Length: 115
Ligand SMILES: [Zn+2]
Image (cartoon, rainbow, N blue to C red; front, side, top):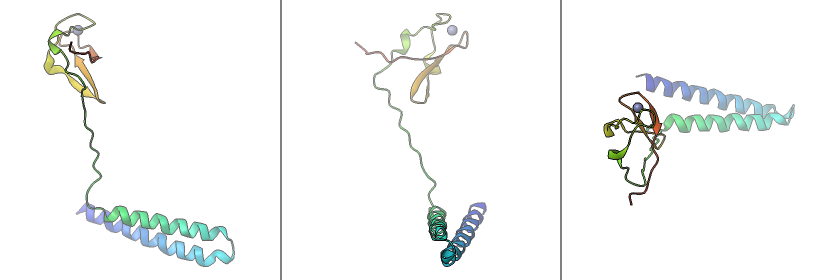
């Protein structure tokens, strides 16, 4: 399984970073900056282990909410004024888009109050 292999690569990388971090911390007598670098290495290794252990893939859920009903029946293409097919309604980045069957024009629909 490729995913398992990747996990082990991450673990090995993390182990290497921890080793480097320890070396850097031990070498701190030469340069005090080494201590900080060593700590950074270990912190990065911890982060790698944390993500490698995470079993679930990161889920990004996005709910698209259209605040008011759209009157699709009364929509004409602004380009060729043909009646538009409500089935062509698409939601892109949370905005409703219509595609004209006749001229291929794609435009953002504005939400209008129903009254
Ligand atoms: Zn059109």
